[in-house]
Image (cartoon, rainbow, N blue to C red; front, side):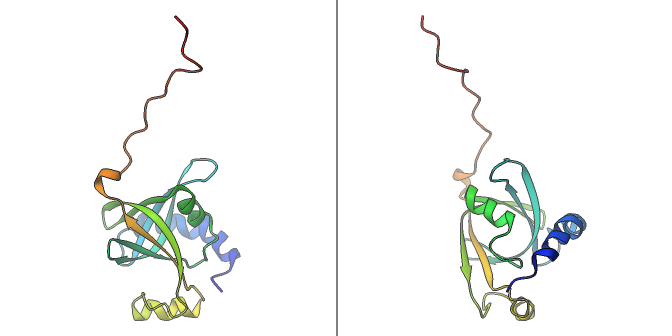
Length: 146
């Protein structure tokens, strides 16, 4: 069982605000930037991240039902900020490994002890696929008849 929801709420309000400025600079940490499913608002959440071929794996310490995970799945990706780099991620997929074989030994022990065995895999977006600025809005309503 992942960490309790009450702890997640506390961390969202208190700990995340303190961790965000340093999370992208410490080993195994990053900040995932994502958009709200309903609001479109931008959010930034500190995460534990591990590189893998062609992408990244993010430990889901609070399980797969957290808002940030649901946002990344709904929008098809997000942006990872780690060690001074900005990396666009696409094609998010949830996974589960009770042995947590993908994590380094010390981290693996903690993740198993807390029941945090789920993860989110995402691929690095190809350069050509990175979203550019939004298209300019078209005219309001149908075009006038001339």
